[in-house]
Amino acid sequence: MPLLARAQQAATPVIGFLGAGSETGFAPHLATFRKALAEAGFVEAQNVTILVRWANDRYERLPGLAAELVRHPATIIVTAGGTQTALAAKAASATTPIIFLIGSDPVRLGLVASLNRPGGNLTGVTILTVLLGRKRLELMRELLPDAMVFAWLSNPGNPAANMLRADIEAAAQTLQRRVIFLNAATEAELESVFASAKEQRAGALVVTADPFFTNHRTKLIALAQRYALPTMYPNREHVADGGLISYGANSIASYSDIADYTARVLRGARPGELPVLQPTKFELAISLRAAKAIGIKVPTSILLRADEVIE
Image: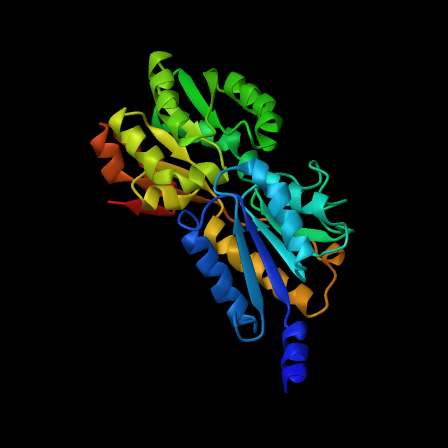
């Protein structure tokens, strides 16, 4: 019987889940992943084991955590929470199947050979959050036509941040607006970001997609309210938690997609033959309550296009 028990345990696949944020900040995301995985036939503690490792915003820990999961060994590694998490997993193993969820172009980052035929041991989902900068600037100009200066908030620890800067500068020039670039990688730095934006007379702030900003969305929203600075966020959960406006793919729903790919690989599919998934719809969410709190009148044109309006 002990031998049989060990044999059954050895046959149980192990999913290594690697996140750049924290368990608290990403609780609904991980819950969605577990639920979708169970619906696909893999129930935690029954026929699959899930090892979760969080970097808690310390991105320098990601390579070590990824290596730990490879050594366990994990049957498959799922990375969520940005470019740096996927890159750490890729560096840790060239053979362990890896399913990623990122906001950048995986081809440009060198994660896969192409979107349709990834090749190698990686595939996953890109929700294109970092490629929506121009649209977010356009929406903020429409919301605040008199604002001539926009602040752009990035995390310097995210490799995608520098890739995006030239695109944002070009978009701002086309819109005849000036953009100032601000950085924050710790909670303490968030306060100085808003103070600096106000000091430089920014009429609005645009927050890029990053696990750190998702993890500390409550702090961001509170600062935006205190400084009365209209702020655009990458995901609707920011608006649901009290933020003003967001535009992007449904990031939480994307956790169902990576769960589906995880289940397919556990059943024998090869990651390199599964095309990288991309969103087919982007959501615009706005809170009239938040707008009223900082004295903004939302144009009808935005309200008519919004997928979700919070009264």
